[in-house]
Structure formats: structure tokens, C-alpha cells
Image (tube, rainbow, N blue to C red; front, side, top):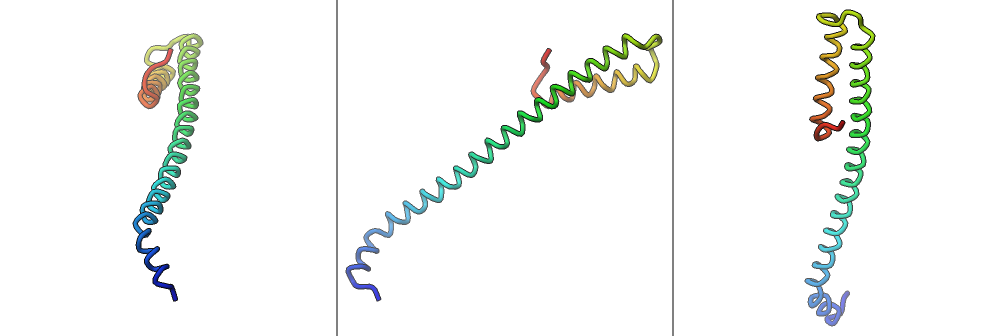
Length: 100
């Protein structure tokens, strides 16, 4: 059993302990969220880099097709270039704009 002194001490300090426990809990939640957010930002950077490489490769592919195709208008090669250009536009939208 607890003595009256121990009970009185606990009752006097319970609010303070509750506040401390709540703050510790909040701090832990904030730390977890911050770590998740950092990981999320790193993942976004990786995807942006990959998309930039893909965009550059598509641009190069368009240029190469135009240079090496003797007859370009109304051909499957032209259709491929149009699709590659549309992919570039989608990539630009996804990563926040054009980069030349």
C-alpha cells in the first residue's frame, strides 16, 4: 500500500507528469513525421532526377529520328516523335516545368 504522503505527492504532481508525458508523446510523433518527410523528399529528388534523364533521352531520340529518317512526314517515325514530345510535356508537368 501507499502511504498518505506518497498519495499526496502523486496528486500534487499528476498534472505536471501528465503534461510532460503528453509533450514527450508529441515530440516523438513530430520526430517520426519529420523523418518520414525527409525520406519522402529524398524519394522525390530521385524521381525528379530519373525523369530529367528520361526527358533528355526522349529529346535526343526525337532529334536522332529527325536526322536519320529520309522521309519523315506522315510516317510511324513522326508518330513516335509526337508521342515522345507528349511524354516530355507530361514529364515537365510532373517535375514542375521545363528545363533546357
